[in-house]
Every structure is written in structure tokens, then in C-alpha cells.
Image (cartoon, rainbow, N blue to C red; front, top):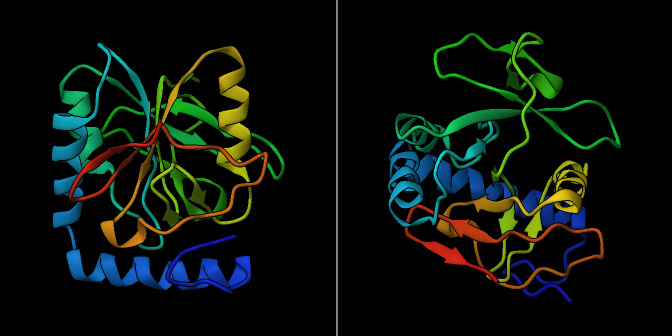
Length: 195
């Protein structure tokens, strides 16, 4: 049973409603949210030395992880961005050095080119439409992060950090067996350990 401000909606309706809330939060908070997220990630998220951190290029009102990624790179962490390999496939990750040119990837999302090294992240910053306090995530329905985290977690335990606005964190989302769970949620206001 889903217990969010949108109880009773089908999953496609829930995605649409959550997207509207996220866009409103993005308009209201502007660029400040990305800098607030960066302070939380760098100051409050438990990081290991020299992590390989997979972020994402924000689109469609997603909370902006780029200021956090730049701050993490300045501390000596390696950065990566996801690459969509195809429908039904897990994501791959290519190293990204800030300032290096990007190419247009699937869905028009910027990604490192083919010459960038493939890497395996130790920590992933994960976008979503809605998160609950137990680490459940409502994505876009393609299952990319679910497959990717299931695949990565077979070999070791990379940590997944849901990146959210405070406005898109709350309620309870039903989980299906294949749904990936976040280890932390970070918003412009706090870092929440979910497990």
C-alpha cells in the first residue's frame, strides 16, 4: 500500500504527480538547492578515502548533484557518469573529469564519450521522482537503477544515495522484490540513513 500525499493513484499517475512536485521544488529553490546538497554530501555523508562516485547529469527538474560532485573531485574522489547501454540493460559508468567535453547520450542526457574509461562506482548518487524514509525510490519506470544496483551488489556493496528535494521525500512507497533500496537519502536540508 502506498502512503504518500498521492494515495490511490496508479503508478503512472503517481509518477506524474511526483514530477509536478519536483518541478515546483526546483523552481522554488533554484540553484541554491544544489549548493545546499553539496554541503550535506561533503559535510555529513560518510565517505571513504578516494571513492569512485557515480553522479548524474540533472534533467527534468532533478535535484542537482553537480556542485557536490565538483566538491568531491576537489577532495580527491574520482567521478563517473552513467551510460544507458540499452533497454533492459544495467547502466555502465564512464569516468568524468569536470571540464572534459560530454556527448549526447540516450534520452538526450550528456555523458562521457567512448574514450572515457569504464569504472565501477563505490558510491552512487541516484536521482528519482520520490523517495520514502526507508530508502524506497520511485523512478521513471525503466528499471535502470534497479538492475544496475542489483548487478553491482552481487560482487560488493556500493552504497546508493538517493538525491532528493525535501519536498519529494516522505510517505511510504510499496516495494517490489526487484526495487533497489537506497542506503542514504540526501536533501537540501539533511542526510538520512535509511538502514
